[in-house]
Image (cartoon, rainbow, N blue to C red):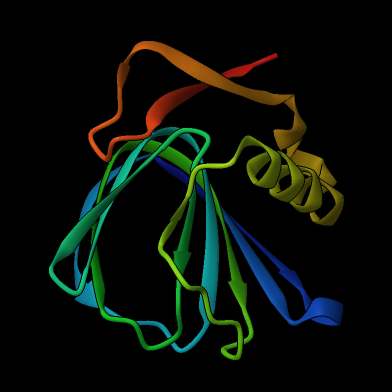
Length: 142
């Protein structure tokens, strides 16, 4: 599959969406002036923040604060990233919450109904644990 990027701007919410598919890339250290919430649909995203690596698997939510220097390794990942106003601040970089993931997925569907990400469903992966100590998940098309 060829990597694909789809951008959507929602001016009324001062929000931008990026739906990226089949991305394998190493991003050098960089920063953004906005906050971002990324829901990982497929694959794995490894993000280094302040010398610590954080691994986001399918079903995880990656949170990046404004002006936070980070580097990433994307491996055959599909994700939806939301760029937010810079006054949003997050206390930690990874959320492993099925409820939060599902709510964000539904929210992005209402903003960009043309691509139908609502067809994704995530569930716990068995039996091995993820490298960050949490149980890993897999997401599949319904």
